[in-house]
Length: 103
Image 1: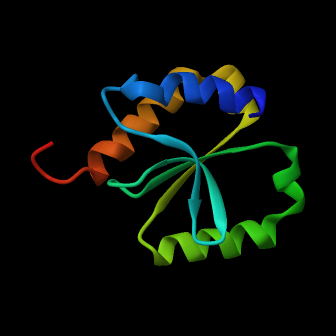
Image 2: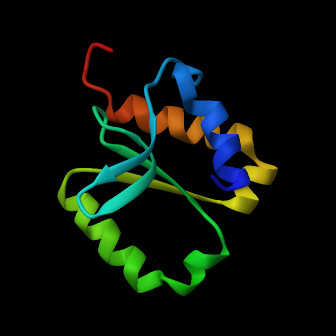
């Protein structure tokens, strides 16, 4: 994993973020999600500089995953380096919106 992915995995693994369950390097169709909560259909992607060169590919991938009902949250390496608390709040907020009622 890239350094920024390690930081996010430490935040997410073993239910550390408010008990939410995530897996890393999750195959979904022909794609691999950096992190995914399958029940809530939330994908977390950490984007480095290489994503600046793959805008069209990323758009096709996002459309495919959206068709399957997934929401994608994208954060840059710079976001991870400078604003982890906001990232944690954003992920938790999205998980609460996506969670089946009663959880």
